[in-house]
Length: 164
Image (cartoon, rainbow, N blue to C red; front, side, top):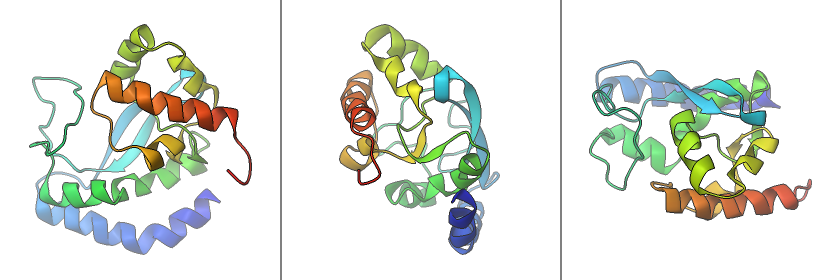
């Protein structure tokens, strides 16, 4: 199924890649460490939506609403989640599934494991291209948002079925 998704999205991905390259300096795609099944790290593939120097000198930080690091095209592709399309490759590789909790960065996971009870439960399944929390809630930009999204993730894990 990941191959079908990749093939069907290739024309749109080509347009997004060109738009990202024309909008700002740097590569169209980038890799970023994420935490997946059983807490294992893997590299997720995404379209670049921020400046290439977005975390230079600061390290990992939560994205915020109207984040100045986000490029013009980046705002658009984030709004419509087009930055996630290259992750069909991660689905093909078996690191992700179509639906499941969205994978988070290791720097944030270390912090969230200390502060949010049951946070590690979300690592009992493969992360997804989309998830119940992503559909029901906006971009998370804080520990509080992560706690709310975890509620949706746990609901999904407890109610996983073909129809859901």
